[in-house]
Length: 229
Image (cartoon, rainbow, N blue to C red):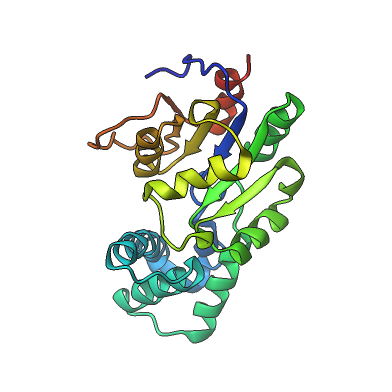
C-alpha cells in the first residue's frame, strides 16, 4: 500500500466518525485533572469496552443504541480503575457529545465538497450523538448525509451496515471511498467492496483479516490527492 495510490471513478467519500473524524480520547482530556494519573488508562479502557460491547451485542442479538453502549463502557472503565464519582461520570458522558475534531477534518471535507464530491458519515453512533458531534464541530455544511447503524439495529462490521451507504447515496460500491482509523472497520469495508483508505493515525500494526484497505494514510489530509481526478 502507498499513499500515492489513486482511486478512480469515486463519487462519494464516506467517513467513520469516532476515531476518524472525532478524537474519542478528547472526552477524558477535558477532565484529565479530575482523573489524575488514571486518565489515560480510563480512556483506553472506555474505548476498548465500548467497541467490544458493540461486537458482542451484535453477536448476541441484543442491540441497544450507541449512547447506552458508551455509558456501559464508561461504567466498566470507572469500576475497573476504582473510581466512584457520579458527577464525573455524567460530565464524561456529556463530553462525548462534543468530541474534538482532528485538526485537518474541516479543511479536507471542504476541499472534497468544493471538488464536487459527495460526503457522508457512516457510524455506530446514535443519531443524537452524531448530530451533537457534527454540530459542535461545525462540519455539518460539509456533509451530505450522516448515516447511523441505529436505522438497522446492528453494529459494524456487519456488512449490512455498509449497504446503508448505497441505499442512501445511490452509488455503486466501486464509486465509494471509505475512510476509517479503525483497521477492523477498514477491512470490513474492503470486504463489502468499497475502495478503502485506512487512516492509521497512530502507526498501528496491520490486522490479520481476510481483506485489506487499498491505501494507508497517516491523516485525512492525504485523501484528496487519492480520490480527486
